[in-house]
Amino acid sequence: AVLVGEVITALLVVRCLFLGEGAAGTIRRGWPFLSAFHPRTVLDTPVTAAAFSQARADLDPAVMRALFTADAARGDLPEPVGARRFGLLLTAVDSTVFNLANTDEVASRFATPSGGRRPQARVTTLGLCGTRRIRAAALDSYDVAETTLFDQILHTLGPGTLNLADRGFFSLDRWLRAAATGAHLLWRVKNGHTSLPARVLRTLPDGSHLVRLRESDSMLCRRRARLGEVTAPRLPDTVARLVEFVVTTRDAAGKKTTSRLRILTTLLDHTTYPAGEIAACYAERWQIELTYKAIKSTLRGPATDLRGRSARLAEQELWGLLYVHNTLIDQAVTAAIDLDVDPDEISYAVVVRAVRDHITGHRPCTACGHQPTPADLTATIGAAPRNRPDRHRTSPRTPKERQTQHTRYVTYTIEITPSDLPKADEAT
Image (cartoon, rainbow, N blue to C red; front, side, top):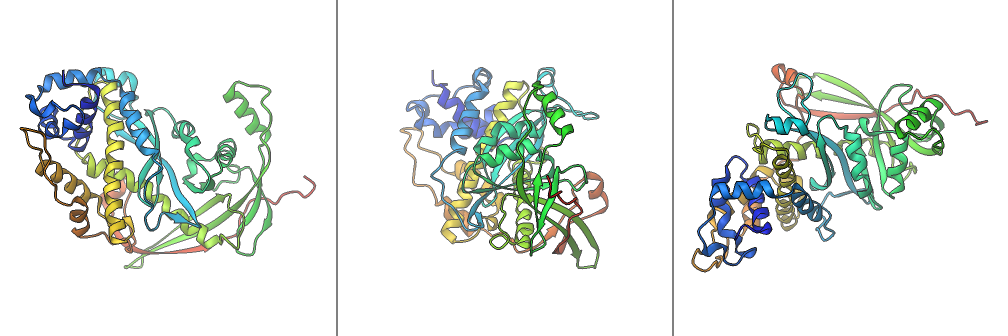
């Protein structure tokens, strides 16, 4: 039988690249390329769609997860322009959700949001901001919190990196565990008086503040209850740096909006890491949002649903999408390095089309499996029109906002502001 594990896995990767096609289309596109996994494959008549579907149903989703994980953890990747800030490799964490097939079996594994119509999976990823490649991921049902999933991949942080996170990820316990990996942190925290267990120790010349983080009695009680350990010790005090600032957005018509942000970081030296540069660096967190947009709108397609009608098949597709995304990013980075440009200039849509055309147009010989010399895929990507990352735009985020708003070109200004946090009692 030619439907060995490697062949099924390879066909699943092809399926995720051409997600809108069914089993027959997957076999038609992928079958000629499988001689690398099974030498006789291209000499045999392709299997039927029914045979592939049955073989896929028998494949444990852990296989696709292992494929993604092994590739995501590669240490031999080239480092393009713009991958670092302050000499540190820039990463970001966030989560998104995927709609799944509305079947009883899928719904028994993946929850449906209140008021929603379809089961959803939540995916939390750690991404490289400079390339939008995913370094680690965890997925589960919609009703599993993004922080719970982040805890599963937190160990993939490490020395030499600077991690960005949105305000939903902070807790003192998680902050300490993340810092213990050796990574530097630059996390947004909530603006409320009681949301951050901090007191100001000293205001620095650039307007930022050294603060003491201390677990309160109520926080300790809640953590003990969550852990089920009534004698769990109090977390140790730690010093961090707080940068508070206001971002003003102004469009060509003069319309202005302001947002106040509070950033907590382990980068304590204000001379090496000025407050204004810390504030500007946080904008790079948006790269992980663009990663999700690329996967969902360009690779999967905005009107394309995941096709798996069981929980196992849905998980296969999700891990497959993440793996295919990373391989596409590798193509984009190769082209960017050849051109000596920032990968932001390489259009993800161009890469997807080029790779799909490459697979469709360069089929091996069906008689012997010999693959003709393909056109230079990297050159094709590099010759295409490039993005303009110097343009600053803002777009409506919610469906309601999109009914009345549109994408606008804007300018941003950042103003460092004082903190209203209480000062530390020197006696304590």
